[in-house]
Structures are given as structure tokens and as C-alpha cells.
Image 1: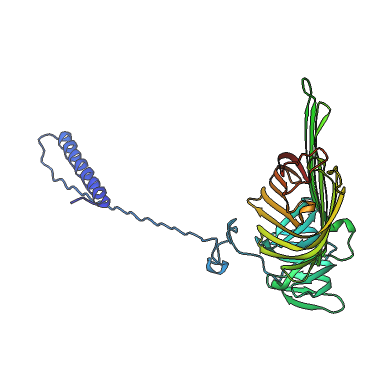
Image 2: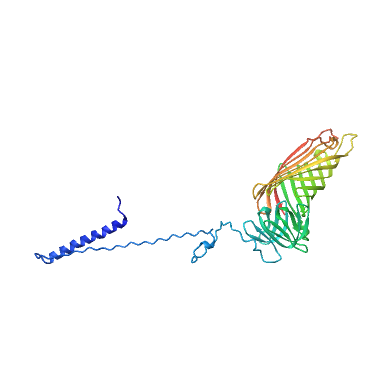
Length: 417
């Protein structure tokens, strides 16, 4: 059986007293040899061992009332999920304010909120874009144009909480937040309605072969709460040893009028296309249609459009007796898919097709798939795969029918604005 530390300590003191007693007896005996004396030995030892241990742990997540009154409040944890009270708002001023779902407030100017994203300008942080689901509150003393999913439009100072949208002005109103579709600054500068991106690629070669290849893409968009105007361009030029090997350009214009959160009218849409190597000097298409958002999520969107159109084509050359231009009715259809894979990587796949008569080429297809990597806030690295097809290209005066398919892989530097 093991002895306790207290028992061992007491034993050591008693042994020490016994040894000291023997030493005293020996000393007395040596001082008076032969004499008999009475010796009394005492060995009284008092040992005290009092230990006071305190172990007080304060939980920073616990409310201050759970702490002892004489203890200071601990610093708040950086990982705390506690958010500021909704009753606290920034002081009245001329700025717009947004609060993220993490509790931080940002001061600046609201540019637009549409398609579940809000664009915000900060003098310190420059242009910022957030998913609407990441915005907890919004405060704007300026007049904002607000569009709800049922088509109602209201203009005035706006206050948004996690559940409500409150609009001030001459006739204040209150609405559920889930009915909000979009908002833009009312009476703001025209350029605040515009955004876009452009990329360019250039290849130069000199020496035994003199060659250059140029390609460019651009996407421009103007948005209001109820409308969206999109302009797209893609072009390619290539020349080797003074001989042109590619020269094609395509421009698309589309104006959308929203009727609900997902459904919109296309009034109108237009396309211009030129590719002499497909025996097309010019081709113009105009039409109307409808569109619908199949997927409308913060990181994934997919819409489809379709409608009737009219097409007119001018050919570079034709067979003897054939007209050099033709017109026909057409049915057009389109699709655009966008996926924010990460905060810096985005995939965009766009398709446009036209079904028409054989005299102008039958079915045509145009597809652009782009993988974009953000290098900086405004500069991107874009890799695009382009497919163009005319099912029945017009035969030229040389009697040769161009191949129906063209493929291109484009690497370019993009700029967002």
C-alpha cells in the first residue's frame, strides 16, 4: 500500500527528531564521563500543509450577466456569430450604406441591384459586387427606383432589413423583402446604368513567315429595374504573307423588358454577321421573342429565348443566274449559362441559332464558351472556344461550297468596367 505524501513528510520529521535526540544524549555523556544523569528527550513536530487552488474559466460566448460582478467582461471572440442589433443604423448622411451578413457596414454608393447581385462603389475599396443573399441591411437617403416581382415600381429613399423593404418619400410603403426584384439609383448619371467587359488577343509573327492574327470580344449591358439592353461583339482577322485567311465579325443586340421575376419580352433582337470565307458578304437578322430564366441562383444562372425573325443575306459571289442577295423568314433561339465556379473563376456558355430556308443557309449555329480567371479586380485571363456553323453555305461562282463548320480557340486578356 503506497503512503500518502503527508505521511512521508511526517515520518521524515520524526526520524530527524530521533537522530537529534541520540546526538544530545551522546554529547551529555561525553561531557561528564562516568556520571549518571536523567535525560528527557522530546520529539514534538507540528506539520501544516494547506493548499488553496482556484480554477476559474470564463466563456467569451456567455452573456456578461453570467460573469462574477468583480470580474471584467472578456474581449469578444473573433469567431462570434453575434450580430449588431437591427436598431443600430449608420448616422444620417448623404452616403448609401450596406451591411453584410457578417455584420460589417460599408459606406459608398449603390450602383444597381439586379439578377441577385448588388454593385456597390466605395471610395476606399473601389467597385464591389456582392450576392444579394450576403446583404443583411441596406440604407439609402437617395431616391432609388425599386421594382417588385409583381411589376410594381416605386421611387424613394430605401431601407432594407432581413425581412422588409421600406420606401420613404411622399407616400411611404412597406413590402416583404422576398418580393424585391431589382433597384437602381433614380435620376443618377447615365453611365451608372452601364457595365461590360472586353477582351483582346493578338498574335504577331515575323521572319520566314509574316503573320498576324487578331481577335476581340466585347459585352456591354445597360440595366434599369425593368429593362436590360445587351450588346455583344466578336471578331477575327488573320493574314499570312499578305494573304487573308480569316475575316469575320458578329454583333448582337437584345432589349429585354421584364414582366415578372423570371419572364421577359425581347423587343427587339438583332444580329449582323459577315464572313467572306463562308460566302457571306453581309447578313442581317431582326426579330422579337420571349425569354425565361430556367435557373436564377446567386452563383448559377441560365436563361433561354426564342421568337420569330426576318433575315436578309448578301453573298460574295453566286452561281450564274442566281441572285446575289436573298431574304427569308426565320425562327431564332438562344441560351446563356453563367456559373461562378469560385470567386475568381467564371464559366460562360452562350448559344444562338437560327432556323430558316435553304436559300439563305438553312440552320445556323453560333456558340461561345469562355472560362474567365480574375487576375486582378478588373483584369481577366479569358480562354474561349468558338463554333460557327452554316448547314448549307451558298456556292460561289467558282463552284466550290465552303465547309459548314469553323472552330476557334482564343486566348485573350479581358477588362471589366
